[in-house]
Amino acid sequence: MTKNKSKAWLYLLPALIFLGIFMVYPLFDVIIYSFEEGYNSASQTFFGVGGYNFSYVLHDPYFLQAVKNTLILVVITVPVSTGIALLISLGLSSIKKLKELFQTVFFLPYVTNTLAVGLVFMILFKKTAYTEGMVNLLINFFGGNSVDFIDGPYWAKMFVLCFYTVWVVMPFKILILTSALASVNQDYYKVARVDATPRWRVFTKITLPMISPMLFYLIITGFIGAFKAYSDAVALFGTNLNTAGMNTIVGYVLDMLYGDSGGYPSYASAAALILFAIVLTITCINLLASRKNVRY
Amino acid sequence: MGSKEAYKKAQAAARVRGKILKTIIYILLVIWGVIVLFPFYWMILTSLKSYGAYNSEYIPQLFTTSPTFQNYLDAFNTVPLGRYFSNTIIFTLVTTALMLVVIVLSAFAFSRLEFKGKNVLFTLFLSLMMIPNELVIITNFQTITNLGLRNTFLGLILPSVTSVFYIYLLKENFEQIPDELYKAAKVDGTSDLKYLLKVMIPICRPTLVTIVILKVIECWNSYVWPRLITDDEAYFLVSNGIQEIRENGFGRENIPAMMAAVVVISVPLIILFLIFRKKIMAGVSRGGTKG
Image (cartoon, rainbow over all chains, first blue to last red; front, side, top):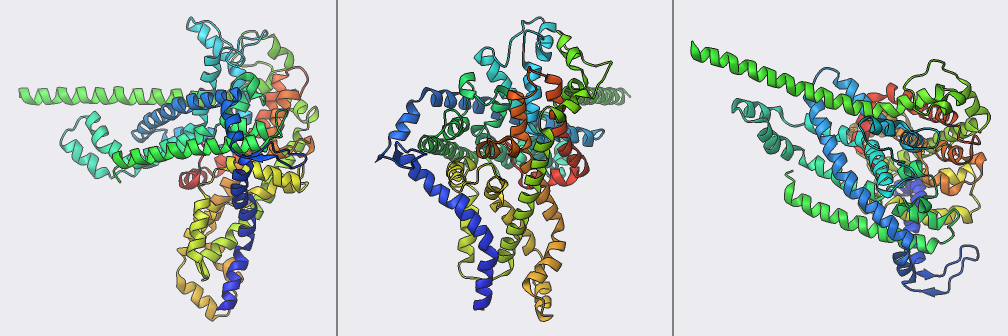
């Protein structure tokens, strides 16, 4: 039996080593970093311990801009994407013809490279001296004035970012909601039909409660995902997000770590911990809300 | 008689209403389908337009009469797209292979072997799933830099060869294999490792295939870590490669060539998806997250 015991640890050894070095140790290290004041990457020295890093980050206009951008992104994209996904999934589950084709097409954004397709979005929305861009053509067609969505006003840039984010997260939501809708017991619907229940009542009294656990799962993961937005913004506006005024919290963390403005792991750690605290709080609120509203 | 008439009328009205609803549904689905597909159409279309033709279009054209493959040649010749491509393949294959070894071994230990503190350890493993990558990436960046592994494949690969979630998924699957098989194998004197390789892995192949596909997608699209850990173009993957092409490639904005590069990068995963459509969608609904 002792032989068996040591053997089990042998099997676990690779996982333990990798998780230890790249997951557990960093977890403690990031906290230590965040309290080391004036840490210097090159000499690996610091001259004090305290909360200065946090106060620096919280007073940094770039960080506040990043928080603002991220919050707007979260508040817009989570409800919009969940709502449209629900609408599309309801549509999908009520048709038979072409259903598989639609499902396949709708899933495509999941398997595409965010950076690569973001470039296409940039070209579609960009307005240069040489071309109006496809989207502006559409706006002109409907009688609007063209806007540069990539280098133009803040709301335009925010619109593209939200639009692209929704485009990217939709496949996952549609997939989850379609399978949730498919797993609702059909007997409920049959009974409702016998009673000639109106569609809207069927939806609010049967469908919605039955899929509410999955809906809340999507809202929670949606919040977490949107708070960590970064690649989408880089794909649209380039790596220098601070100049574009479109940085996100994760972008701020990475900029502090690396690149032209990098070399400050302490500030990065403080910002990352603030992000973690925000996400944790929101998730807890979501869980509490779901306990009240979700029927399992 | 009158009531029958009325019934027929009501039925017809209901049928019309149903038809209208169906039509609205199809219109909605087609609209979203167009929104999803249009960027793909646009990238292929633009990649087939010549540089001159594209730049002379003040109003973008929705089709091209003289397609050219010159942009694809440019994408491979003027920028090291081929290098980015082969780097990504190496990175994806090695990461996935190493991860498979690590997770199969630990899932086996958790599901088949008895040892002290197993449940505690497994709970600890599961709790690691809650830790966001953004939190640990800072130290990992420092660790890899201090080890002198920046701009190496080892530095790219090492942090992503374990996944607690896949260990969990595989362990659940391993546990469904009846105990009797294991006991029979023990009676026959089969070693644990041989049992794992000859019995458990073949039985759990579907789960393993799902894990492999999900990991391949993840590796192919990974951007944040490669960008942090490489600044030498020789080690760029497709994601930071395309960003480099965008910011410094092709001289003055050669958008058709850029789009050719985008097509080349996107095609492998789309093909993979079309082949393994069912498996990928089932796998993602079991354990994928993206947004």
